[in-house]
Amino acid sequence: MKTNRLYLPLLTTLFFFSANAQFRKYSNEFLNIGAGARGLAMGSAQVASVNDGTAGYWNPAGLVGVKDNPQINLMHAEYFAGIGKYDYASIALPTSNNKRTIGITGLRFAVDDIMNTLFLVEPDGSINYNNIQSFSSADYAFIFSFAQKIKEKANKNINFGLNAKVWFRCRFANPE
Image (tube, rainbow, N blue to C red; front, side, top):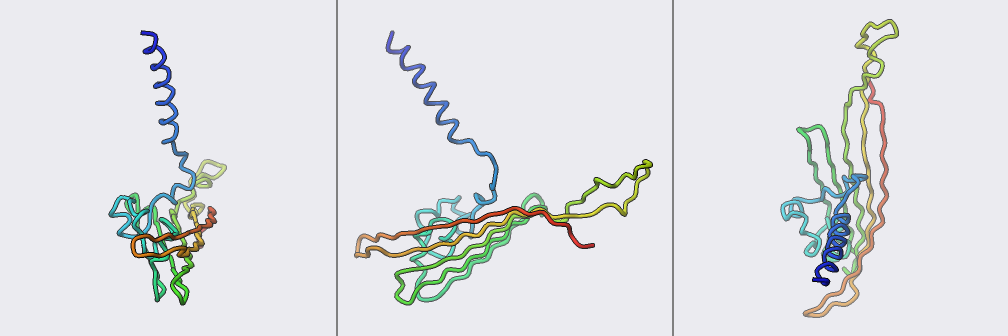
């Protein structure tokens, strides 16, 4: 009976720790959308099997699968009935000996033509529709990737990959 009293608080504590690990704060959430038709169709299970130009997003070590010729990947998707626009572009450049690959990736998630109605009402209470202006809000990210083969045998390959990410958010007024 005493051992049951010990297990209950222990299991409750483990439950709360595991539930806390699943929490997201939604900052830079556009980096979790994904890239490439294959990766999105696989439900983001692409991490272990990627070997094309989208590897800079999923798993940089997979860039060594790009051989002989550079690869360019482009993707456009719209969310929320066309309000949010997601753009992905990448280039993977293999070296002449196919042991190293360099990748550059660009991501953009934006909502364009947002109506700013803060100055719609004049100080006298009248409505002036000429005061409506539009603006855009966009998140940008650039991923710089490097991959290298370390060991290659018939039944065992060891690859190394490295990513550096830079992201920023900007809002700008649209010209009229």
